[in-house]
Amino acid sequence: MSVHAKKLLTTPNVTDSTQEQSTPMLPDQQQFQQHLRELAHNGIRSMLEAVMREELMRSSAWVGERAALSATAIATAPTPVTC
Image (cartoon, rainbow, N blue to C red; front, side, top):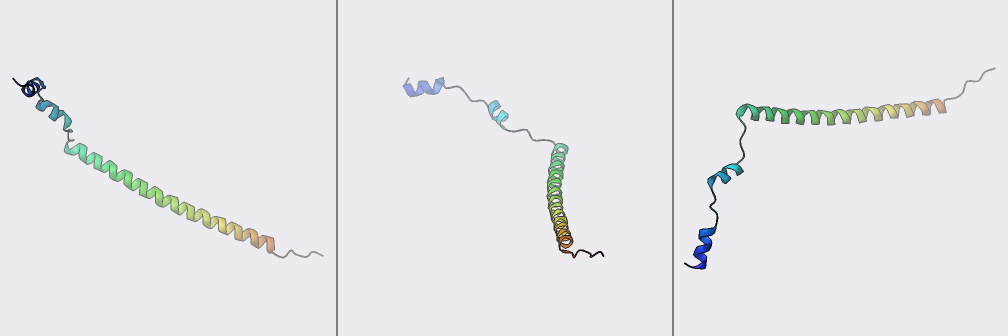
């Protein structure tokens, strides 16, 4: 026997069981649908939170502008003269 033939004989056999283990198990239809619902729910929640955050920033900026205008109006208002 040649050295090459010996190497072929001494290599371990790879069985199909290792290939089966590397293939991930697929969830059943109910688990898959539940997972999709959770993904959609989380996506909608994230979008709504972003919109709400933007609206809050806009409204707080508007309140700040109104307060600044009111403060300026008060500071520049003529003082009443009392006799």
